[in-house]
Image 1 (cartoon, helix red, strand yellow):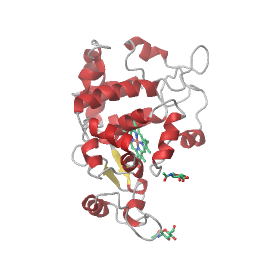
Image 2 (tube, protein in one colour):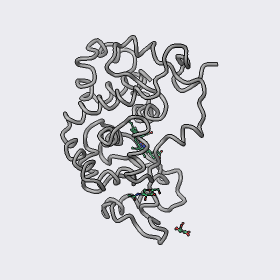
Image 3 (cartoon, helix red, strand yellow):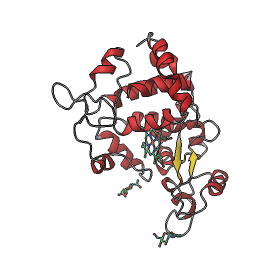
Image 4 (spheres, protein in one colour):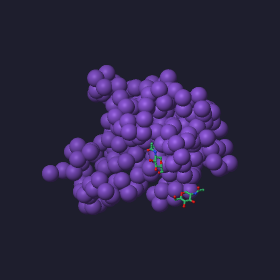
Length: 250
Ligand code: HEM
Ligand SMILES: *[C@@H]1O[C@H](CO)[C@@H](O)[C@H](O)[C@H]1NC(C)=O
Ligand SMILES: *[C@@H]1O[C@H](CO)[C@@H](O)[C@H](O)[C@H]1NC(C)=O
């Protein structure tokens, strides 16, 4: 998952400074030579990897590079049932999100900051189309979703049975890692119920308002990613260092 940070950095440009300026100034050159070709081959890769990172793999952003490269021990068992049980669903309300993050030692602040990752990437219609077509089971729309944005989404996701179409999560800049997630969210244009849920509490809404400031978002994101990276860290002889991050060694 080291590749993730490399890719994000090459791709995002502006992210580079806050992630590596202090922690790893030499990262720049390595990044350029090793990974630019991967991103140009697939511009969607950073988003996929960032989500994967959230789910499974972990990076220690502020540790020396070699330690990241060689030091990560992953579990030897990778169960999809286990993974799904731990991953928050896009239908979660604030209480559920808060609990899910708290179980991993992450705060409401981390929740709001890390949700900003939805500034990049794409989502399948069925992750949110209940908000468009059948929110409470009465063929209705989620009132917490901006109606203009909902109308736009309906042109993409034509029915509840559409499980294949994908839409940009941060319309217009879903390829850029920036702070646009927050002004969109505050205009009720967060794509998932889990995004909209962040506006249902004064505390989390206040944090979202602060994170509109891009410098602040980048600083906080790096810190929360580090905290997320420390989850379930296996040391000593527990687990193994994966040759391929996504696959248990054979
Ligand atoms: C707060 C709870 C979260 C929920 C409920 C959630 C849910 C989701 C869902 C449902 C999707 C779309 C999947 C699909 O339909 O194909 C998605 C995409 C994504 N999520 Fe999250 N997520 C959460 C937090 C995070 C965090 C913490 C990160 C990383 C720091 C993250 C990074 C991403 C990225 C990058 C994508 C786009 C993937 C792609 O384009 O292939 N999410 N998320
Ligand atoms: C959140 O969802 C849970 C589980 O469905 C439910 O018990 C709880 O009442 C909900 N909380 C709020 C604030 O809606
Ligand atoms: C909407 O939800 C209700 C209640 O869950 C369900 O009975 C109905 O079939 C759903 N409508 C569609 C179009 O799926």
